[in-house]
Image (cartoon, rainbow, N blue to C red; front, side, top):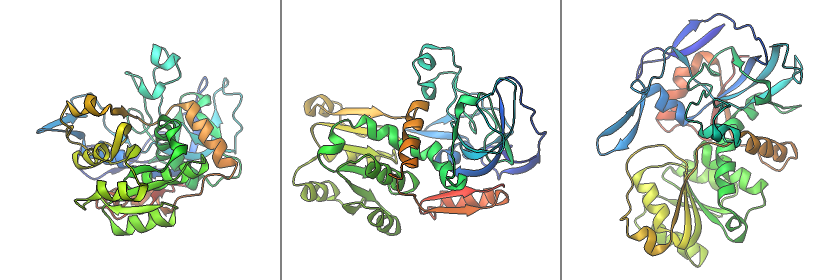
Amino acid sequence: MRCYCVTEFGRPLVAMDCDLPEPTGDEVLVRVKGAGVCHSDLHLWEGGYDLGNGRILSLKDRGTKLPLALGHEIAGEAIAAGPQATRIEAGRNYLVYPWIGCGECSVCRAGNENLCAKAQFLGVARHGGYAEHVLVPRSRYLLDLGDIDPAEAAPYACSGVTTYSALKKAGRSLYEKPIVIIGAGGLGLMCLAILKGMGGAGAIVVELDPAKREAALKAGAKAAIDGASPDAAAQIAAILGEQASVAIDLVGAPATASLGFDCLEKGGKLIIVGLFGGSAPWPLPFIPMRGITIVGSLVGNLTELTELMALVRAGKVPPIPVTRMPLSAANDALTMLRDGKVVGRTVLTPA
């Protein structure tokens, strides 16, 4: 099978011919029909994360093994399964949950494999969806898509479950008044769509790119503010008539985290999702003085993805813009994302 792999951090992906895996036990072999191109793939491609103050979290130093086929937003057709994968029907399309843990630690036993210290994430620690096929280690990680287009469904495995999990962390505030969403890329548009599906009170979006602000308004944002404006926090307060209760930072840079913090009322909640990089920008005394809760949110668990897909199947989540590109264009897709040229999500379509 053809895979597009990182063979050297910071260098173009390399097309490789890999052996087609043969599933055993509870494993399932999936023919990939859609693989979303996520901003996290850029960090994996480049080899690390910016921790601020000149520090880099090096994936090489943390033991990431190459070659590695990227891609954790995966949907496709089950074509073969081990003898224990009895719930899987060959020929049906499934969404793949990629945030796989060790399955044995207390975190995994609590249902939060996405937070496992020995994670085996697809496209991160194991070969992912930038390939013609992917081997899924346990059948319970496959969610039946029915008649949903796999290419449109693939982003739910990351941008979908990530924003759904972040929105759930907002609690009742989600329904009481509009929240603030910082970033209107694939995550931001997905967050708006899922917020609508959950019956939330809406959102004010903050985004630097005018085209993405326009996309956010078309997706139902109550307002779209230029994050570069020095009075962005004041604009948010003017629209709401007060400060915000919840801000979800889908970028995760010092400037966005600072704005998210500044726009909150006392007792408000800042939920940080993005991994752009940098260090925390707040004076520490302001956190207790204002009673602010700062929450980190890393993707989501299998239960949350199952809940999200129930909303999708019920027709409650509007689709986000999806640009399809062939698997052979994987390098171009990553470059376009890095350069900020993607509105919505790019999905590679090997089959």
